[in-house]
Image (cartoon, rainbow, N blue to C red):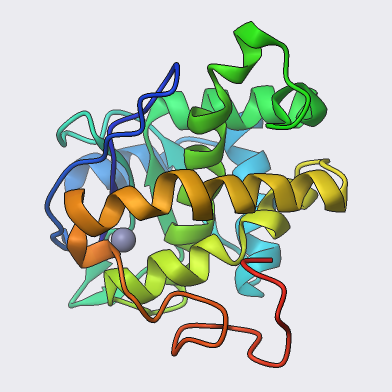
Length: 209
Ligand SMILES: [Zn+2]
């Protein structure tokens, strides 16, 4: 249960590779034993609102995974626990985002900041994606699609206006998600569309928010 991507800066949106579930290990337990940092608390707050679980723990730390793994939700006996892990970089991006959400708006970003729009969007999507694993979903295509439809919620929870939050969701849907069909096909589905099987709001034709 991992989000696998190559963090893409400066307009390179390549993604890479495989999916596996990983049981909880001693390193996770050590991470969980320490108090959450301010950045981790930001992610926890959003994950709790998204999952409606009373307490979700998020820790950022080395994942002992390939560099393209941004987050993962450990399992115990095949079931998720109420926590997930993020690469340290994702915590940094979430903190930057929280500080000034409008700075990364794909419509209005300054040239130097635009280079980070993809990284910011991946960080938002990673929180949403792992939150659906915490809810018990294991099918990566379904999880990634549900996550995409919740990017607006994560961005909005971190301080972006609704209109701006929807821009990040659209950016993921139009710029990043299509790459998955070829690079991480197990994370992609033709049913992830307005009116498709994974549409969380079939009555609405707004997509993906
Ligand atoms: Zn996953």
